[in-house]
Amino acid sequence: MKKLLLIINPVTAKVTISPHLVDIVDIFEKSGYDVNIHISKRKNDIKEVTEQTGSNYDVVVCSGGDGTLNETVSGVLKLDKKPKIGYIPAGTTNDFAQSWGIPRKPLDAAKSIVSTDPIKTDVSMFCGRPFIYVAAFGAFTKVSYQTPQQMKRNLGYTAYLFEGIKSIGTIRPWKMELKHDHGTVEGEFLYGMISNTRKIGGFDLKMKNDISISDGLMEVILVKKPQNPADNPKMLGAVLSQDTSSEYITFEHVKQIEFTTDERLPWTVDGEDGGIVKQGKVEIIERAIELFY
Image (cartoon, rainbow, N blue to C red; front, side):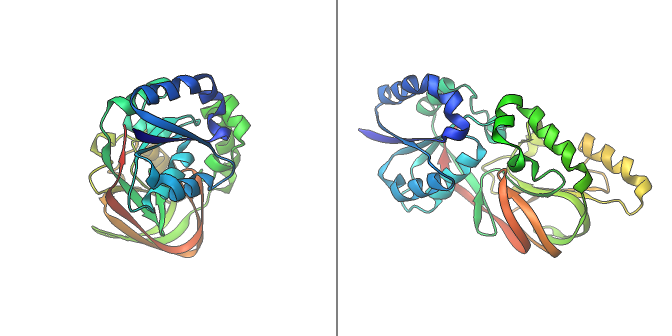
């Protein structure tokens, strides 16, 4: 009999998963899986359990937000014998699930896992740390992990807007140089992200049809500070319309990118605190895992 490990993050998934847990297990068992359940107890617990026991399973299914998926993927990457990965989204925004068509309803997500074939999926590395959909710096990037969990549950996207409004006064440019496959970009940037996603914060990326999670490429988007403050409205207009032809926006498909800043720069990785670094490298591991979606 095939073996399946179901990992649940109670912080993000309890309300969503609890009413359906018996039915979810039933779906897996009727599909020929012997199911074990692990309830996460603390940060990094999911990564550790996956790394320590994942090789004993054919499939590891995680339920929680994007951070839960990140921990699961991080653990699987450490294994020589890698289980396939399933995801039952139960966070607030679930950018990854929305980007790649993973059902938001728990029972539908479980049914999809047992009725579809896994797809070989890219994983990116930020300074040696895996991420599945985005590493970002600059304006609003602290919002996702600083927003209180209870507010996220109660208000959804509105919670992020509240926290974003509070952070407007702290927006500042960062002077940096970025070297990638196609050349070098330098300047003062208000925001930047290196990603493999079609949605950020629940919003569609305009160029989503040009983005794949299995093509061995990441996408880089940078927003440059205007030299003349009078041009701020033009820059904001380009951001709102996602005008990649604008002089204020850089958009590239890349395999790797190296960055250097004048001072240590805070990053987020898959919506979590990514640390404060002055220089680093971001690269992609092509088709590193097998994921149901």
